[in-house]
Length: 165
Image (tube, rainbow, N blue to C red):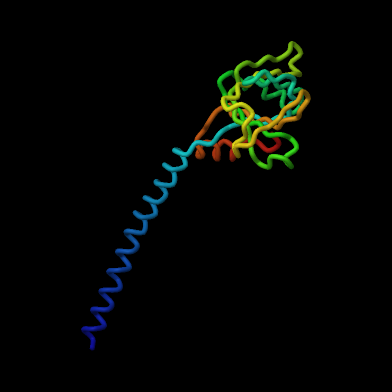
């Protein structure tokens, strides 16, 4: 009877020690895998603004933006960046967007208006394969992807920003 109690005591103390040793290793491996995944996943950093269409010369679309909120971001916009355009009135096309590439950026001398020429590789076909008919003065929600940064960097840079900025 005493031998069985000693065997159980030895077995359970051995398994507890084994679990304690390996739980740290398993936790460390999982944490390392999460950090590697977070640094490998890239998240787009974008500038969002509202614009009106001034001209369409297929496959180029010319947009004008003079929003006060977006003026600080005008300097981040360069040719070659990817663009997602959505019609401001989403009732017709839902969440579909038109993909494009910035071809030319012109900021006026006072810095309060941005004029952008956007190349539309598929024309005015949305991501849902619907064709959009355009007219001058049409309002668009514009998202220009200015860079990509890892998810890990994005979390840490937003965590350490001063409050109110």
